[in-house]
Amino acid sequence: MCLMTASAEAQIYAGDTWAQFPTTDLYDTGVMNMRLRAMAETAAIRQKNYQYYSDQAIEAYKNQQWNYAISYVNQALSTQYYCGLLYYIRGYAYEQLGNLRAAKKDYKTGIKYNSTEAYQAMQALKARKKHKR
Image (cartoon, rainbow, N blue to C red; front, top):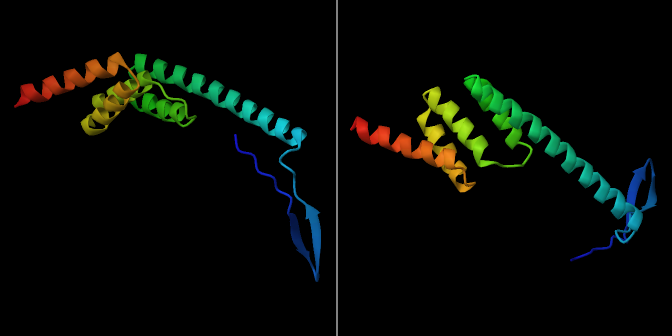
């Protein structure tokens, strides 16, 4: 673990004089605890948003609302939590809308996150492509 201390002073120009303000010492446990609490709260909010948008994406998928499914998956993934099933849902929605390139890309990403649905969809997409030749 690497810790840095900031013992320099900040200088702020106020008219024709410079004001000296001490900077925060990173060894200050109060500041560190505050930062850790803020990080934990942010993670909890991101997790809650991820769960909400994931649920909405699954519901839109079940109702065959492809554009909504894509939008909700994008919002769920923007929380920086990732799930292979979400990539499958977005890929399937793209496939239903005729965007096979985007579908294939999402299926590949879903496979990286161990989604069996994405793997099966990719195999079916390859089989259909092969059958058309």
